[in-house]
Image 1 (cartoon, one colour):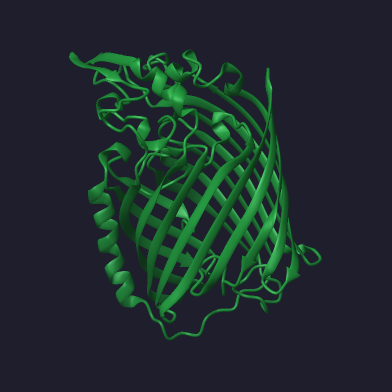
Image 2 (cartoon, rainbow, N blue to C red):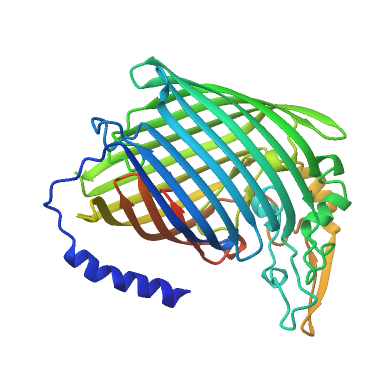
Length: 428
């Protein structure tokens, strides 16, 4: 992997040498349609293979590089077995004086990552995070479960004052989580199975339906949404939800997100920072709906609790822009640092009471364990700050179609080793 990424970086050198920054930019009009192979890498899902279609409508070009309508559809499979199908729509022109955003997604993931509650309080053992034995049998998928989930959402935004809008939305989720059933793995040898077997995750929470209503405010002074060089973006929302399975639960969750973009060198270097968090205000949440903070380079869902808080800092450098095949292209570099943690735990007392749960495993003739898998005060008796650093490069077409390749490294091996991400757009 490192050799492939190094080769890609070397290939960029002659491209940058040929890039010209002095050509007049092409103003796009009408519909611009792209059908591309969807190829990316995710640290938790593996390599993605599929098809990606993006449609941008720029009208008469007077708003360019802002679009009037955007539609994106993705159908893909991942090398670790997941299947994903999604459809997105976004427009400020479908309804008068209102923004419409819609999303639908189905995910079937036979090896969905599950690392426990409350961040560092849930110990991580690298010896148990081995996907398959050398002979293809007796595999360990200790930090995984099987996920089936369908999500559909619709958000509306309307103007209240300059740069200030209200936001309201609805979301529906159907979900089903089970033990891993891939033939080479023993699904009962997993942290998720221990949580369910001992009641830390009630059986009623592993499947069912959830409906949510959201309301809040958005303040936005960014000069351009997809790749802002200056401005402030802030949201605050309250979401009421009801979960239905063999039992019913109600909840109220508060969430906020603040981002600022500062031009260090105009049109060249931008400093971007973000602080975001979420927390349970009232009621109770099923485990799959808990607030979480994702950090680049760490395991997915590693920072999960009743209240979470995190921040990110990016430096984004535009190296060159040029035109080819009647399109506008841009190349650049990014460096970042992330930090976050759980500030109010979720079912911590029950987690500590089950600290005596242990796991032992023999793989390829090597004995591992016993490990105190649910709670081990020898590793962490309370939450701590999680941190990661990294960098990468980005590529954009017509300012909206952005591909960012980022390499993240957590500063504590309890959070992971290294993550490589190839994503559509920046992380914030």
